[in-house]
Length: 179
Length: 175
Image 1 (cartoon, each protein chain N blue to C red):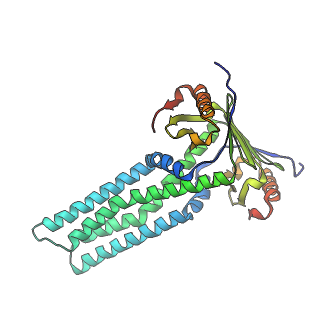
Image 2 (cartoon, rainbow over the protein chains, first blue to last red):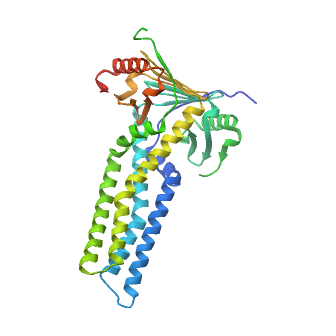
Image 3 (cartoon, chains in turn orange, brown):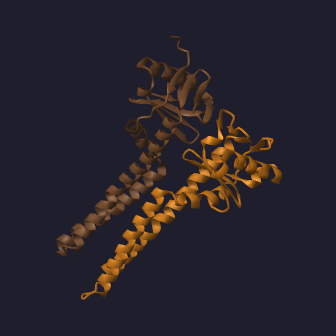
């Protein structure tokens, strides 16, 4: 395997782009999916009761619509609130990364992350997976999902070399294509 | 032993202790607190509607049903948060144990080394640290770390580590 020169990226993430890329991924986490399914089922139950109350032998046009309205709120509001919360958290953490002047170095040995007061190194064995997506590079370290936009690299060549280094380092754990 | 000699800890996290340390922090986050208040108010309204229906309309099916659903809203957020934090703590504990992570606390800061990664935090990187009854908690960036006193070789080693951290971050250390 050819030895590739290291790629250095001074992080300059776009908070909105990060939120756009990462929010749908975090929305598919097991806990969030279970919670959304529970809310959906509960909401459906309420709507069903509401409809039954309005169409039953002694229709009630006060409690029926209240139940339907409540069911719609319970079923539809939580996913919207969760999505907005996740996006807010992602934007906050990206702004923190911007303040910290984070620098990434991708090399044959793995990934180095440095800020003014911290430094860390992760061997390729420390990665769960990585994926090339249309907007850039996505990887998982421990329980963290990190997105680095292709526009953050100095050039298209640097981005392609970083992708190649990830591919060489992760083998079958490197995935191509959309998330 | 010299007070400035580094303290080395092989991390073997205790999930229950870590849960006890992380839960209050998670529950105090503004978004979680707001969410809990909203759901609690919804639950309270539902229970009240159920009670009123049972008493005034003698509705012995819908009344109790509203009460049960209301009670679900009162209790559910607490369990949901607990489960979410528990999942994160278990995943972190497993990763730290599996990769044999060793932490070194010295006058230069906090270093960690595992089979697959290493990191160094200068004292300036810590936004806070606190001695808790069961261990030491500290924050770097937006991430909170907990190391139990039981993971240190002895109580004296734990006390020495706390003293080094206190010396490193000064007024940002909470007792």
